[in-house]
Image (cartoon, rainbow, N blue to C red; front, side, top):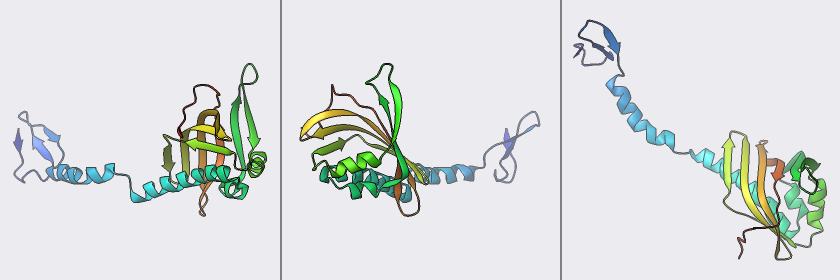
Length: 179
């Protein structure tokens, strides 16, 4: 194979049988080598979005610990809902309900509710975020139950709003992140 006399700038080579084969211009390789590390790093905006979505979720749990239903209500979208698997029946069934009753109960809990999340995963795509968080729920300092929270959020221009919380619940084999 021989390279055309233009120093390889055209990105073509001539094969021995006279055919022409296109190859990447050498400059493209340099460009990719320089740009690749920057493409692989999350942007500052993406990290900020993840932090904002996480902060909205953490506000829910701070409101639970302090029995501040207004703090909790502030991060929920209108018509937000809970979705859960009700295992009290056989076979288990999906239940969906408004968050309003639960938010009201937070204000009456006297600060006895403490839900600790850990190993949190936050995924953001533009104005949509998903938070996956194992949790352990304490009532009056004792473990009540545990499971996984899947929390969906949308950014409405004023901030992240929770649109749905789905969770699993079990009362055995619960980790104790506080202990």
